[in-house]
Image (cartoon, rainbow over all chains, first blue to last red; front, side, top):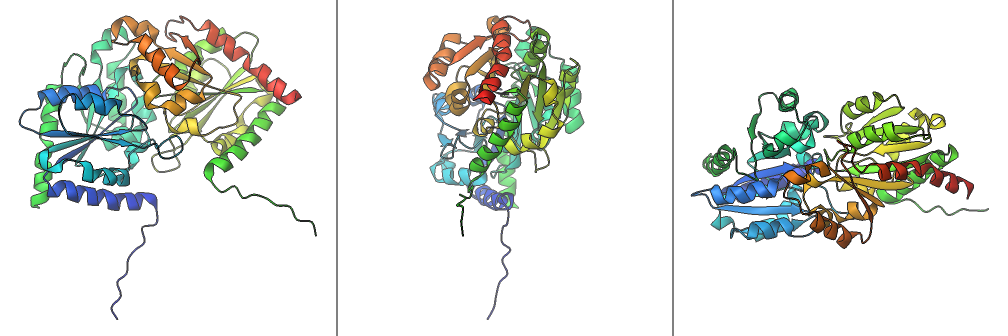
Length: 228
Length: 228
């Protein structure tokens, strides 16, 4: 009798990686590029996405909204007439503080994968746990607001390290804050040397062109993965 | 033979409550009142504490700093020549996103409980999980920055519900933001009707007197508890 050895996925992160790969396979099969977008609460992810939807040309975008409760962000995004799905993490006591691969898996059937090229997963606002869980994305980006202070890369290093792109938002407030941009950038380089950073104001639209170009290039990555 | 039934603490929150009570007993024995201070990253907890240390008269304050990594906030507080202890949550992968009672328990021997009347525990910056774990505090307060937007009470209801006092910080930025204060306060009342709220600017010092008075009254609660 032939027996196959199966290694038991002993810890949660191992199981998470397995499910993330299944999500990724589904996204690739539909040629959909996926971005995991993270930040602290109120850093401006949704406003940045609203701007991006208007600016993206020739790329069909969809959004998966992760929140503890409610559909506030999903309602904002839906106003732009693109496919949006809400994922709430609150069945547990107090709610989960992050998305994991299995939560995203449960949303996959609800995603309009045939009708989009790019899926942005807006994670729960939190600088710690979301960085620990892959959900099947092609790329990770984060938004950090200058109102949060210069020290955040040093205090939440895994988050700043795990992203290939750091969007530094609310630069329109620079004249009104004691924010030392050079010190922030030095702290960023201390934890993730040379990581690409974009200074933007999602509110005024200043600086968002390179962000939109970066987003628009994500579906090509999924295509490459599929072809390989 | 006499047998005592002991209910097994089956879940983590039950165990947490048991340890929180042990912490609370230790604090009470020393007549120390304890505040669990929570917020999103960068809302201004440490700046508010620095202001409070200067303004508190006749109350000996100590601070327990909770952070994933580093001692940035503890170093800032230590500059004010009060007892400060750093608790880092990063032994796990990526670090814990909150303090729990057992982490605080591990710090108790390092706290100068005989030399202080008031202990402020500055929790990890996060609007989700810290609200789920009591650590032995007499009171819970939170800081929310107006830069985070009006919708935060609706998106993180447990946090806004679990606190008896909500400090609305950075009001010096009000003229520079599209922030609708009335809408924010209506959202706050929707999740925690009538909860006490204080509008402050930790940066300029505007409005912090009632906060400092509230802080100064906390040790009396511990005394009452001890006498009971």
